[in-house]
Amino acid sequence: MRAALMLALSSTALIACSGGTSEAPAPAPSDQAAAPSPTPTDGGLPFATTAVATLDSPWAMAFLPDGRMLVTQKGGQMVVVNPADGATTPLAGVPAIDSAGQGGLMDVVPAPDFAQSRRVYFSGSVAGDGGKGVVLWRARLADGETPRLEGVTELFRATPFVSGDGHYSGRIAFAPDGQHLFFTNGERQKFDPAQDPKATLGKVLRLTLDGKPAGDPGLSARGFHPAVWSYGHRNLLGIAFDSAGNLWEQEMGPKGGDEVNLILPGRNYGYPIVSDGDHYDGRPIPDHDTRPEFEKYKVMWNPVISPGGLIAYSGNQFPQWQGDLFIGGLSSQSLVRVDVNGTGATKGDQWPMGKRIRDVEQGPDGAIWVIEDGDGGRVLKLTPRG
Image (cartoon, rainbow, N blue to C red):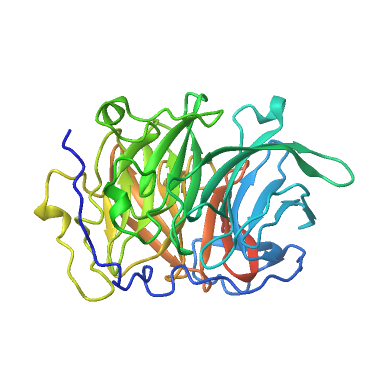
């Protein structure tokens, strides 16, 4: 394994996100809910679209075993959504969030043993010593007249905290062994930390269920932070295991070069030394093919899609897509399918949705669910056309 390479980049470089508007701050939220109704803009799509609820800048969603959904909102709220009627119930007990810029309450995932433990894991951005960063929490979901998160515990925080409001990442995926979780830390628009062995920024991390570092032993032996599993990443807004146990990740490139990666332990994915995009101030970045020692993406987009949210589909409602990846497109206002064949992947479909798609999820019955970004973002259920 080659030692981490450092690249000094000017702090004055323009560091806007993919597509120029891929991660624009969401507008101020407002409380709204909508009963299920057909969406009239879905003509020509291979699925029927039903709007289930309308929320305040939703960011991520996850299904509970009873069929209800947890949905996070950028402003720092978490709600329970009943897909049967679109009813939303706020959760008390959510810790304070710094939601400036690209910050907010981010991912939420029930624990593998949720049916017994009632535990959920969630992430968000906070201010602290040195600036801001992303934090991972665990809590117990308590139902009742006023449902709430109880025993909220901070398990892990990115290091170091730095200035700025961008590229937090904060996605969570549980390993198939049920004993570890993977947590993404963006490079916070600072470039160099993605290659810094001591920083968790620009990395995929592996942790125990209690938040203790459990990174790649080979990297730890070389002096890396003990949680680091892979490095050289930018803004990692989706991570998921497929049914074969492969770990997939998608991230926003700079000006061009959005990526889907197969995450392997100890590998360096090259950013900011290589990318198939360029810096926003016009300076070129060498392409991946110029540096074969770095792990190369499996799929790349230029023009960008501005990926937000990722699933590996395993349901029965769309059997022709089993095993494929689905990605929400922000600036591209699309739902994107990636055709997966083992550990290889190629571009599939890109369907126009008319809105920025912030997250995508698979429902218990195999339907595909997406949420729209921004104020008034809807929770949408996608089912086969009959």
